[in-house]
Length: 150
Image (cartoon, rainbow, N blue to C red; front, side, top):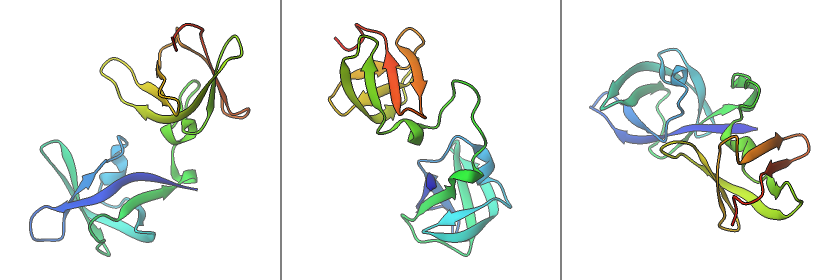
């Protein structure tokens, strides 16, 4: 399984460097020597810098604008207890503690104070301990406290 870590964005300068669009928060991918896939092909970062707080990299071989930047799932560091990758939560059914099915996770949206689970039914749930009671990826179920969906 491949996981998106960004996308080839607009050029930066004339040397083949580009802005990374939708970059992963894991900055190690944007350092010189990092390897991953660009458009499905193996690449290596041969130069890196930041501009306006955004990663700017140059790849060898070069990749086309818009190409997805990806890594194999196994290349990601393991998560800690009660820590999850967004892609692991998308599609997981969400149920209230009383058994009422609320829908499935469509998007995990970043918020000001906390992330928010957006369900395919339009329900929005804050990712806080008071709301999210249990995330069981093996059973493919997220259990939330009653009252947050109303």
